[in-house]
Amino acid sequence: MDFYLYLLTLLSLLSQSTALWCYQSQYSCDDTCRDPSHWAAQFPSCGGLRQSPINIVTSKVHVNSALPPFDFFGHTDTINITVENKGHSAHFALPLSVRLTGGALPGHYRAAQFHFHWGGKGRPGSEHTIDGERFPIELHIVHIKEPYSSLAEAEHDMAGIALLAFLFEETTDDHPHLDTVIAALGKVQNNGSSTVIKNFRLSDIIPSAKDLHSYYRYVGSMTTPGCEQAVAWTLFQKTLSISSRQLDAISQQCRFWTGQPMTDIFRPTQPLDGRVVYLSGAGASQTTAIHLWFGVFLVVLWTVALIQ
Ligand SMILES: *[C@@H]1O[C@H](CO)[C@@H](O)[C@H](O)[C@H]1NC(C)=O
Ligand SMILES: *[C@@H]1O[C@H](CO)[C@@H](O)[C@H](O)[C@H]1NC(C)=O
Ligand SMILES: [Zn+2]
Image (cartoon, rainbow, N blue to C red; front, top):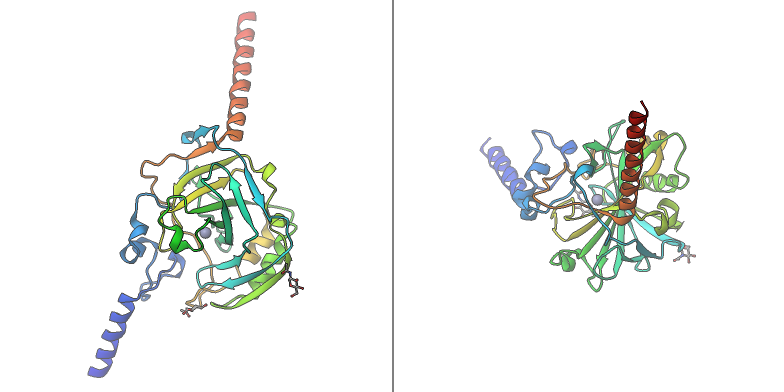
């Protein structure tokens, strides 16, 4: 009896000091993992003032004409990519040849990996929300500033990481190239398992730079512990499409490191804490167009009123 008590105490002590982080969906009362509201206890940056994701209030964004388009390199190259279940999500590793510059970022960045955030059983699972709306899934492409070669090196630079984010909208038609990604997820169901996708092109899943002029920009953090505050975030206004069949498939294959189904893998939105969200100039011309049309509308109303 005493021995069991001792063992239990020892186990609970051990689990407290080495508690692993988890998403809310994984957490239950008899669990010892740290859910998002307790990440900061072990990872202090998670309680910082520049955290991600955020809710973007479109009426409060600052239009900024000094946010030019990006230049992408390697997006149309045919590559072999390794997909690995990392226990909290699945990472698709990208080669050094995939790079970007432009977008008002200070330098050249090389891609490290991409991954998705999703919900489950019809629940949306994007990390960023727009005017409070959560989208079905969100794609993140992680880039590290040159010459840094790891997150650890880049984390001391406020723009050490460039994260590109795409929101998906549910459509009736399938996304033509997402089934390759879904099939790969089916092969990495458990923590630590991996597979290779052959002959993949990043341009198969995301549009070319010429269609990506409109984007939101703000300074923030990684959305998983340690929540490093070193990220220049770019959230494109253009959404990608995913059918309901693909949506069901993408969120139903992997398992967390705890063995539960890997669903609802997103961090709750964080306070803005005085930060400003900018909208690039291409979006500005849209806003100008709306103002212009509204002006025309007013003149018409006025004329109609005068005639009567
Ligand atoms: C991808 O893998 C195939 C076969 O494993 C190999 O022949 C090909 O050269 C690889 N492609 C690249 C770009 O590494
Ligand atoms: C998950 O897999 C990684 C290796 O890929 C391993 O280091 C880690 O201990 C695993 N976690 C659990 C809880 O099994
Ligand atoms: Zn992410």
